[in-house]
Amino acid sequence: GLVKPINCGHFLCEDCLRGYVVTMVNEGAINIKCPFAKCEYNLSFQEIMDHLDSERAKIFEQRILDNFLAKETNFHWCIKCSSGGYHT
Image (tube, helix red, strand yellow):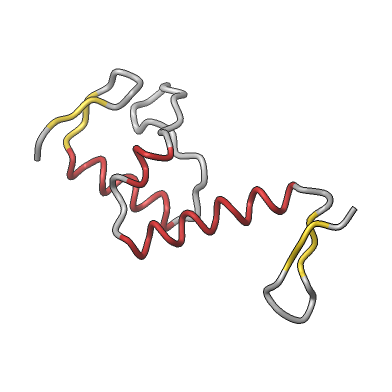
């Protein structure tokens, strides 16, 4: 595949980067680091989304939202359904 730069300056072919991103998303990752050893760069949201099909992209976006809301102390989920909201 075509070799492209990652925003940290490393290069990887499109097929390998796509495979890496898909694997990380399938494993439940939210923050996906550059696959090069010792590189601490987190791939940007756009770098990740560019390598996901629509189904995985939707799953990844929902995981990011759920992770954000889990940290919000004023956000609460209904215990009987999937509704939620802010309560102060």
